[in-house]
Image 1 (cartoon, one colour):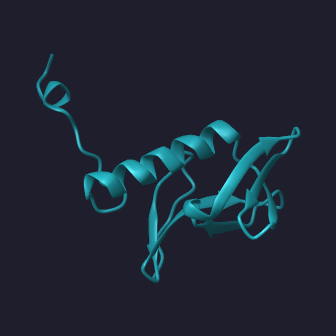
Image 2 (cartoon, one colour; image 1 turned 90 degrees about the horizontal axis):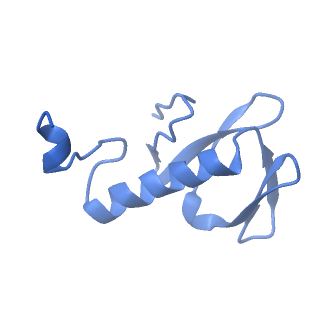
Length: 96
């Protein structure tokens, strides 16, 4: 079962054991993409995601939004967190 919401916040989703992020085609169809398979992202002015396989995907999200989603995904992986869970620093958890 896949749960995802295209909130623009780069939510991570777990599907079939691999981590994916939600993206949206120009026709508004949502789909999931493995950020580890992205070779590069460009805006031409549409956002084009080029995969390692050579396939190119045109999506509604901006390159900046995709970059933030990928950073959040990798941060969760490297910190050993479940996908979508945020970890706060001590300073953030204290009311400073």
